[in-house]
Length: 242
Ligand code: AMP
Image (cartoon, rainbow, N blue to C red; front, side, top):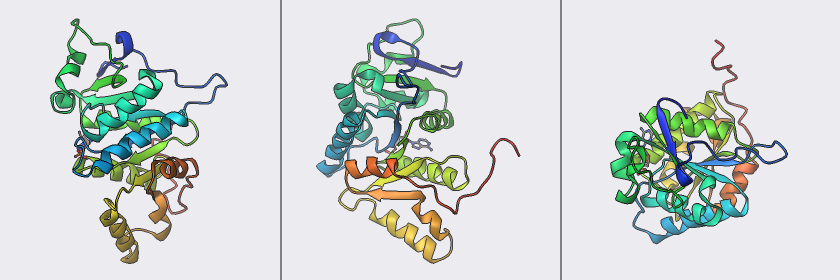
């Protein structure tokens, strides 16, 4: 926890979950980007639950945007039910609390006042802005164990923005973690076609097409992150030392 953030969790604890296994290997963390809405096709919500089930089976922790609504609330709640609150860490900007957390879960950042026990959606960190949210989410994945990565379920502008920032960070050599698009009922076909077009037209290098991998089931998405290969076309830069 930093001065710019406050974290609450089960029993109001302010620290993170155990970040590693007893043998010293860090726990696998997947950052899920997804809609703050549930979508009109029930398959989107069902896939959010299925993803949580597969993560639970594989003992993988969730880092997410910290909302209780839409797909993001569903994946967090389901994993929490299966593995307990320590398996889920939500990171949300203060300004979004009233939009993305339902009433019951909004008192998290009131100083010295009632802090609810959050066994439903895991630990929550409230931060000052969007940039801090994205940075903290990404840093948890960077520090995670084998198979840690980023995964996008269906979503809107916010999901696409977060997904493609993570893709560009990979292309720039800022990180080497996998990024997978879980394409339900062709929802992301337009994005997949655009990537093909960008390669064809010379705006994305061919090897960099595979920075973003796709899957059609939750199980295959987890496998894709486990087997992820860094593209040969990424920049070989030492960020922070130039
Ligand atoms: P959406 O896919 O539009 O429902 O948004 C999904 C999530 O992305 C929501 O939690 C938004 O708060 C978040 N989001 C939207 N825009 C941004 C942004 N520029 N940076 C980080 N998160 C964002």
